[in-house]
Amino acid sequence: MNRLMWFRSDLRVRDNPALWHACQQSQPVIGLYFICEQQWQKHGLGPRRINLMKARAQELKKQLAELNIPLIILAADDFTHSTDILKALISDLSIAAVNFNIEYEINERQRDYHVSRWLREQQIEVNKFHDQCLLPPGDVRTKTDQPFRVFSPFKRAWLPKADDAISAPFGTPTALPQSAQALLRLLPADREPYQHTAQSDNLWSVDENNAHDKLERFIDEQIKAYKTLRDLPDTDATSRLSFELALGILSPRQCFYAAMQKNHGLLAGGNQGIDCWISELIWREFYRHLLVAYPELCKHRAFKPETEQLQWRQADEDFAAWCEGRTGYPIVDAAMKQLLEQGWMHNRLRMITAMFLTKHLLIDWRRGEAFFNYWLVDADLASNNGGWQWSASTGADGAPYFRIFNPTSQSEKFDADGRFIARMLPELAALPAPSRHNPDAFSRQQVGYPQPIVDHKAGRERALAAFKNLTPIEEGE
Image (cartoon, rainbow, N blue to C red; front, side):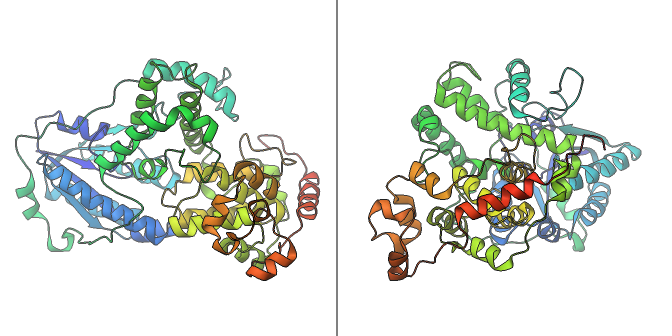
């Protein structure tokens, strides 16, 4: 009999609990990964992210071959189709046990519930593991046994539990003595492995060793200055590991553990830069815990129900200007250009652009969330939704509705010399640095840069009026 390792958003061999467990048994292991392109598109992922997922699967296949584990990569229309194929494979390949790491989004959880129930009915062993969170969702709750809705108390409760629970990450499993490769001859013709030659991406490597090198360099060279420099978009001071975490090339535990080692074994109370980066990782956990506790977040619902009353503007021309980086606010436009060119955006800029769309333009956060989800290579429902609802003041622990970033002030504070603006908007590079943040009308005309599509004060007052008119709704109503 054989064991099946079902890969999803955990495309790595190191610190993969489901894979590690499968390799500790005495049976051959077969890997499985589905290319669910229609499902991914339905979930709003863009072609660049999908291409990188396919490319990573091919790299994983090579790594697993060195462990004598064949990886079957199959195309499926959606999750329903993939489970039908899975059931047939289990019969064809004499599978006695199925291992997988848990995903927390609602469609994925429903898929796993039905698959697990079917497997048990067939008397096939099911082994599930948590790899996306250090502490599984539901393990950190208030004294009244409720999920936390605010980050700071969540973090205070999370830290001692995590400190007790964290252990060294699993390494690469030892190569198995025998391969199940010969079994793949049993696959029917309609389940031939998916063939894909992924285009290389010059900005984003899908190599697992490169991901570990990147983590190690950040920990050794940059993390201690993280708190001081992390908000400066022209400075290479962040880890940029959100991509590797989103695809599962790295695990959160690997990141937490590496930071702790640098922090003398502490998750908090050590170096300020390291503490700050660990706190950002805990935010990532918080959003995943919320996703499980409040599954309506997966259904494009606002966390604060009263904000569903907001009269968002349709304003398609304004939305297009925001998407294309021509709002007339240089820091906003430079950030959007970075997103379109790199598939990534600096976190401070994510907040600035999201707040500009939802407050200055009073456009529904869901439109911005979907746009980011399409373009980001690190697209991740929990973090993307959490960040957007924070900026829009509709979410858990969101920014107070009256906190509305002034894009020009943010630009002057975090890109003081306008270097980031000059790099992303070369038409403004010839202007004196102070003028890049808010060029005068003549300079805009001379270089062909647009006038602001909204006045800061007018946009702010419009947003304040919209939020003030909301009728509070108590939880449970």
